[in-house]
Length: 275
Picture 1 (cartoon, rainbow, N blue to C red):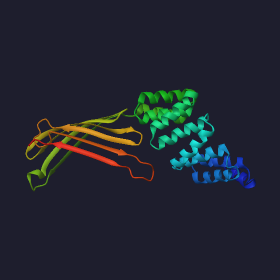
Picture 2 (cartoon, one colour):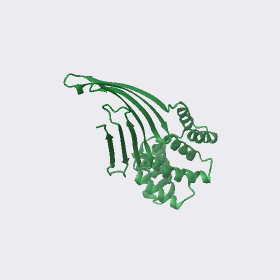
Picture 3 (cartoon, rainbow, N blue to C red):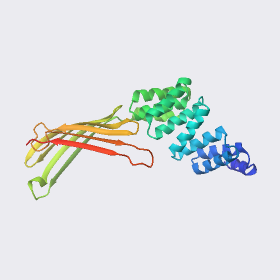
Picture 4 (tube, rainbow, N blue to C red):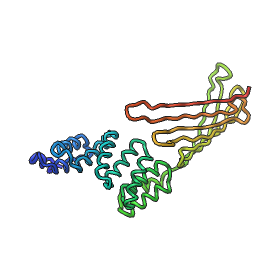
């Protein structure tokens, strides 16, 4: 790094020196310094393709996805065959929470080059996020067949050891004196599993209220169902409905807006009690 910095001082009009220095310090996560160096080079050669691509990558690392996406779109229009640009577009889209858009970019690359390792790894990452375990393993294995990357191998090992199912137990209650409602208890068990559709759970709860016992059953799912859209739905009820609702249902959704805008949240719940 010192030699690269010295080269920029010795030849401040040397575009290649600014490029190499910016790329190296960028990979060292010195993003602000990298962007400054690349922009120094662009001040000399504003249309330099490699400098613009390197700057777009650094801007994405800084979290300014909208700006990075715009610059990458311009580069892609100038050179549609550049796999590096298309892969980076996929990564930025995924970081923006747009997996469908990211998949389209990765698939376009793989249609041209089925062994493009970054696109294969990107598809594996998407499948893993979607809980498509078999597909994720397949993409990671294809990537490893092209190049034995420690990072990809670590992802595959993590996937092999990932636990998709869990069981939770709980006990709640109150013995404070005051009224018959103040003295209550309940025990519950919940089994949940991560699937390609989201987190699916089933729950059973038994308890006592008002000197009467009840059992409640519940089934639900939550997850990201589309780009920028997540939600949950669950239904439940009590066979006896002594004090618990005979049935109930709840749904909620959250739409992730563009940066700087609020994210709308909607929740609806209804419960039916025995008169």
